[in-house]
Length: 247
Image (tube, rainbow, N blue to C red; front, side, top):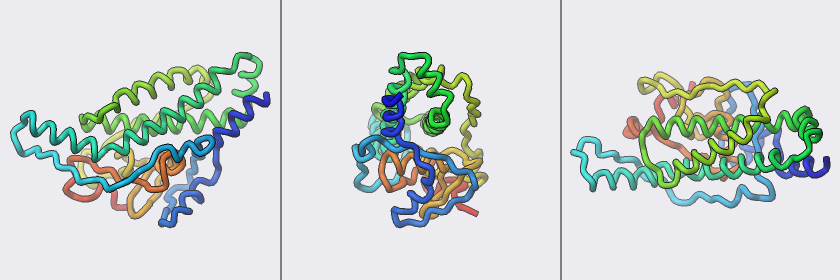
């Protein structure tokens, strides 16, 4: 199965992502012993998306009566404040589609069985499930915030469609799905500065901001080397994600 092996090599899994993260010259502190492998785009595809400019602060103007002009201002603010989520999900769509193409293009049941029962294939699918978990967390926050990012709903539908194609290959792989959550009150929990959901395990600290290990690794390997800092809109005045003060 040389073609399959070559596909896995092109979509390479890395083992020491925490070390890779440190190469960008900033303090990245690992909180947990849990280490999740992350996935690197083939042939430099990670450079296809770039990040430039600064992110303006969010102003929901919630104290004003709602009208069309105010809604347009809020909508524009959402586009600029959370555009990195769209960039993030675009990378995930590309990554998931590449993986789906690898598996759905295996025509031989014998080869497919061999791939699914190999250590390489097993690790590949486990890491891909972590990508899906990141998408699930971002999707949760996006819906909780009830905002509109142009083209974002289409990206989420693409992710659901691709994941549905991949689910049959997980029949014999136990995947534990952790439901995302938001803190009920400011400061009651530590939240990820990328997906904005509560961190229950696998935490890293970067520039005094907290991240899920998988959220940070996926961004660093598939988007660029600058981890963004997202904010809960209801806490935007505080300049910190609720519970983002690390211990």
